[in-house]
Image 1 (cartoon, helix red, strand yellow):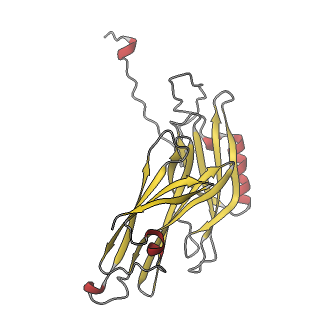
Image 2 (cartoon, one colour):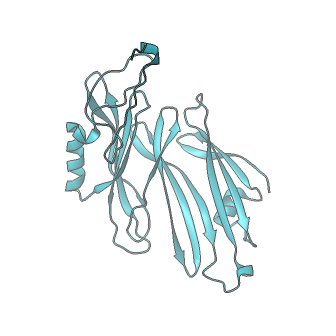
Image 3 (cartoon, one colour):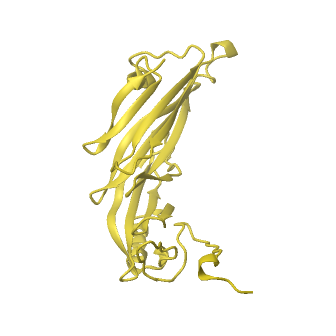
Length: 253
């Protein structure tokens, strides 16, 4: 059965380890082409050595992610070291950020930190969700919460790789309720925040929009975390400025 080159289609099934990268073939990229199978980070000598150094400091692998569609392909690998197990104790978070050098067939570490933050409660690290913060910007979010005296609170922390460092660029309250502190449903209240990116290839970091929805008689006071952020509004828009996301405008309610 004859086929022209233009009509030939390859179906490629890629399986990967934690970092999400395909296994070994260091073929280089040309204009209009995208490398989909760089050397797996865990097979790279420099990454392997860095992982060993983290282990020596009692850090264990937490999670990783590859952006294979990036030029060059990019990779984040996170580690965690448990806290003391108390309610106020989080876990120390460490990480590696690397980019793939297709000419040399190796990963090059661009950012490395054994302990750049502490996140979580009860000594545990939250599971990260990896995201693109801009066309060529990479990071992750951690969302976690706790309950005390019947009141539940949840927070989102966003980190990005900036100038060779892991940097916290945003902290937001994302949920609160008093369901464990009241007996009647009519006395219950809650607040929830959804966060959106505005994808714009002209922006170094995408703008963000946070939208607030409340139920019941939620007390949006100036001292409340949601009140501080939204005031009397239901929407807050953020732009990236001087190393972090700042509120640009508010509207609604």
